Amino acid sequence: MPRHSVSRSATSQGAAGELKASRRQVIGIAVGAVAFAGLRNTGAVRAQGTHCASPWPDPPKIDGDILLCDADRQAFAADYGGYVKRLPLAVVRPRSIDDVARMVGFANRRGIKIAMRGRGHSQYGQSLVERGIVIDSSSLSTVRVIEPDTVDTQAGATWGDVAKATLAQGRIPPVMVDALMLSVGGTLSVGGTGETGYRYGGQVDNVLELDVVTGIGEVVTCSPERNGELFRMTLAGLGQCGIIVRARLRLVKAAQFVAIRTLMYDDIDAFLTDQARLTSAETHGPLNGAAIKEQDGRIRFELYAGSYIDTVEQGNSQPAWMSALHFKSDRPPATTPIWDYLDRRTVGATRALAAVKLGLVNSALTTTLPEPEVRNFITSVLQSPETSIGIWNFEVSPKRKSNHGQPLFKMPESELSYELRMQRRTTGPGSPDAKTMLAATQGLLPRILSSGGKIYPPYCPILTKGQWQAQYGTETWRRFAESKKAFDPNSILTPGAGIF
Ligand SMILES: Cc1cc2nc3c(=O)[nH]c(=O)nc-3n(C[C@H](O)[C@H](O)[C@H](O)COP(=O)(O)OP(=O)(O)OC[C@H]3O[C@@H](n4cnc5c(N)ncnc54)[C@H](O)[C@@H]3O)c2cc1C
Image 1 (tube, protein in one colour):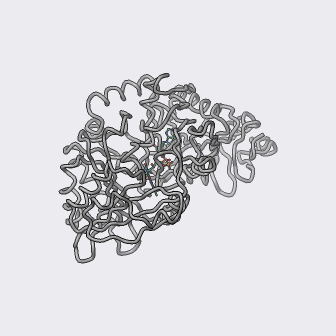
Image 2 (tube, rainbow, N blue to C red):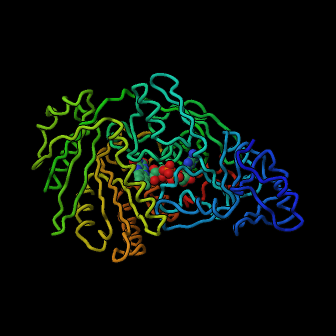
Image 3 (cartoon, protein in one colour):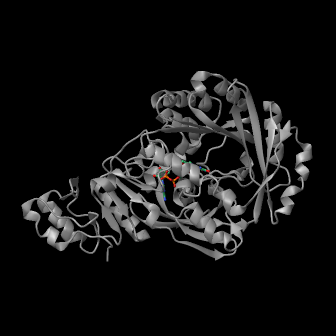
């Protein structure tokens, strides 16, 4: 039985043209047909001034809920960026994988656009669907460690859910995102980056198997060996060829603590060279860095390198790799339990999301640039007031192409590259305005793509068709377009990505 449903008494009042809906105005399954029949006759459901009309006379019967009222739809009309607003016709809260398949099949037959939403942390409308259907994945969040080194997780589980389940077994996925509220399906659909990516690639490089709902509503199990092209075109595939409903992930042994060293540099060459050196050092800890512009205009750099350790005391002894580096000064190591390290951005991200709901805007750009381009790019962006406008965080982390194997998670051609995450935001009266910040972000795209750099789609304004082709390159673009036709022939899946 549905938890919330339109009451029978409400539907029986259809002729009056106004219906009393249940407390949350949710159309439920068991009475769905009755409720929708009532809606078709009356054309509208109104309760407390909200508009709850069903757009369709014959929606599918599902075990979960189909939410139709304004308040529910408005909650899924915006994302973490705050730039784009798109109101869906309905929000679906599935109870099963079959629910997702039924809704996609329905959308396919009707030519209605549909997308799965993780937690809406992409910033430029990627998870939004104007006058279409949004599937809220959060109701599909079961996580099960099936073998010591393998976990099965539904797409709507957060990385926090996964970490809790796997740490209980002393294991962890090799690449963890820095914000535990992101969903598994959301990051596997965009790539999934983390501070151990310099060694293990993207999260998509550590997936063993997927269950995917294709654009015609079929549930297909795929892996590198089985239905391989669907597997490869779904991972980092921006929801274009299929919706991920289950993923089987590889696990590695988890440490008890992380000891992070902060090393300081004035010289960009020394900073970048040391980061590159650490990509092959005998350390398995996190690696990241930041470019920081001081009030006086000076640019300095911080390198963050961590060691995974099993006792707090181990954090105090200097690791061997430090002696080969050329930093100017360093801070005492900060040792934290593994969970606190993984959870480090939850408070800040939650606060930032609340600010977006009050009208502020986030405008991020993440790009990965070939090594020879990086020095000039960082210094020129930070030196110019036009290009540095609103940047409050500029992260720099090295990557190695040979650790990345999924075709849609694009990396530059050079073996060594650097991921640059530039975050801008409005902070209220007196801060740079949202349009100027967006223009500054967009202005960097031609330079990035023409120099062989790649963008990270959830953290990048929607590209033009030509820019998407430059991003993927001729051969990958051809494969992606062919798969789109094969697996989503009516092009209903995930329109917000703006690719096809
Ligand atoms: C505070 C913060 C920290 C972040 N940290 C990281 C990080 O460390 N690493 C990183 O890689 N990214 C990071 N991101 C960037 C990015 O926003 C997310 O990777 C991505 O958007 C996933 O978040 P989500 O689960 O909210 O997915 P959403 O933003 O809801 O979805 C992303 C895209 O995938 C589609 N999608 C969602 N679920 C599915 C599914 N099951 N099947 C098919 N398509 C689906 C959506 O329609 C949308 O197009 C961060 C973002 C924020 C705001």
